[in-house]
Length: 442
Image (cartoon, rainbow, N blue to C red; front, side, top):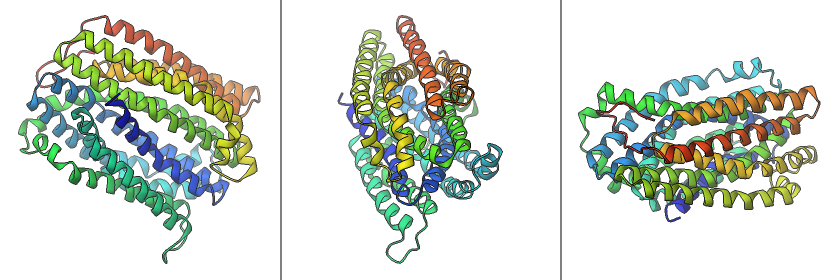
């Protein structure tokens, strides 16, 4: 829990920027919420490929620390920074044709221009977003979380203030609406990356300076990418299925899209808590693997599952008990509240399964098994969940609720299969991954 609590605070803080953006533009119009929702879906889906690849630092750094291999820690961190710079270019470029993508998916003509503007502005934050991810994973593995928490808190305060100034127009600035929300988040991302680098330099300096020439060697860099890509793809598959549901929702109407975004924001916010536990589990399991202590690895995995699932049970009770009250915190639009209040209980239904699957993924990442979650997400969400949702929502006429029931079905499948994989993997041989000389084994 000493590691899990601050990691959870960090996860919630990262999510809070998007939540505040949505709540602020909710005071503008339903179309503004829909535009931010559509733009944010696209940005997150693309950006999380890079962020997911960089999550490879969880097992690499934590296992190196567990093995007391300071050189291995430095190599992993420096390769992470190299990858952050390299990945920022194609990821930023992939965000630029968003208007064409939105029109191709039949999004409303009143929403597309503002959503595309949001995405173009957000593209300027990809470099700090990825660099921050590297620094964050490094500090988490080192248990240096106090500075990270303070930087997140201050960045969120700055984002909220900038949202108020730039969305509504204060201190002489014009009201920029959706574009203002995007610029506020961009500035917040740059402040987070630069602020963390400066504030945590004493802890980061030993693993960044001196720069090691072998950090640029292609073979170990490629092995790092090979280990990280399944994580990025797994996350994209998960975010992507929600993105497709959002695009389908946008074709139904702006009000439905806005209600969906509110429910998704809430589900995403509650998801940050077990996601933080998942990260802590990956680090603690990685420590144990690095030390060659399988008993401790199993103990850390068991504790992570109990904490993550237990928290989600409490979240489920709130979402099932007061959906209308939660929806009204986001908007005063009665039509949007009606849609959101119908979807929020479904977000409550899948809380326990969401906690199970995300903590299981963290445990598997800690032992270096990154391929299994990717395969399970592909089958659970895309082969089972999405077709069921489209069938219920469009063919049977259940509308937004049908699409969300499909997500529930897919999530249940993913959670149960991953939990079974955790049991099998922890019962087997646990070995440290060393990308400088060993072939990857997952």
